[in-house]
Image (cartoon, rainbow over all chains, first blue to last red; front, side, top):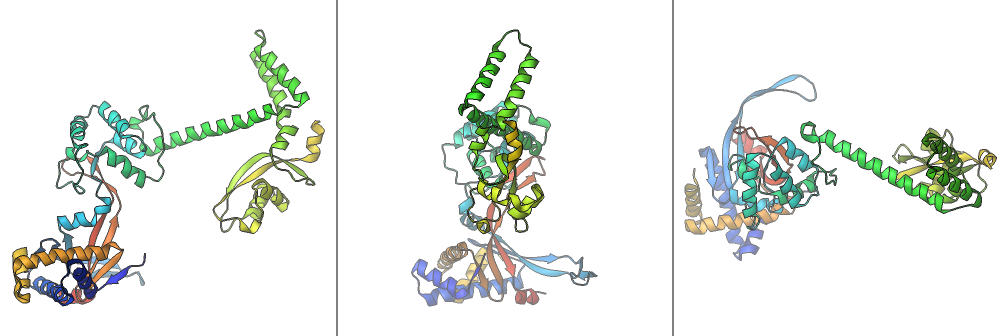
Length: 351
Length: 90
């Protein structure tokens, strides 16, 4: 963040161009303004400037500290400091980009709601109403009124407003959290269990559940793909499996065993090999993904191959599997799939 | 020193009316904001510098009610004394 330094002259130039006053006039004003300010600060402890703010002379107490270089204890003596607190108008002008946010009250439950954003305004207000908290119910009435009015109040700090009135911004709430929460999850069933659990644990449970769902779905899709590519031999086996499954007297266990044993060869069949790109003269077949790794400055594909397979001879398979033409062009931070391999000799024996 | 006294001091120095002076103060404030908004800092020699800093959102507890509140992120104006001024007042 390169900061440009604005001088007194530049300020007076900006002021002149904004107002149409002459540069000499604005410069004289700015100079006088600050010199008066300096003199006033020498005289009084508090200077209030309407439209700007208050400058206050504060005494900082002596304290003990440590010299960073030597590590020895050092005592910092008492000194005077000038503090500046901007005027309310100035604060609002400066905070304009963030003016739509307001301070809101939180309950333990609310933290969960806040963390799990992307809900509509209605969802949030529904869930809030369901709680028995009187304060929140009061706020709901106010929100209904205020939703039509423009929200032009600046951020309300706790010293200046009642706690109840600050929970008026469900709209802003979701916006705020979308911006600030880096790992927000979309889910619609936040009603279920969490009241006593900490919100972080709650989050992780849902992440894991969703992940398992996605993995399961992806696996099922992959598995269905195998079934659609039917080879004559396989057709018979799948037919018999289906027949056995529908037979009323069949023991459930035996059906499971049959389908299990019949599906095992299906996995290493020609179908799974056709699903992935293969190296023709290579020693191995690619039959799926074994694991994923992220490329780091100190870990490239070769190094991961050594780690995962024990040798670098698999590197061409990895490059082929990830559609990489040029090994040196693999970007740091990219996720690489490392294939599951079977030796070609071993596979042939299954036929 | 309150605003009235400060403004009257400036108006006498510049030979302008206090209302004119107050008007110019707000014009000056706007000019300062324009300058600050483009990620700059306004340096006044012998006094200090003004800078806009972004404050992250935080959870705070209302001391009177004991309720937790979420304060949203905001931009705030910051003033830092210059060394010359620091020495002057100490």
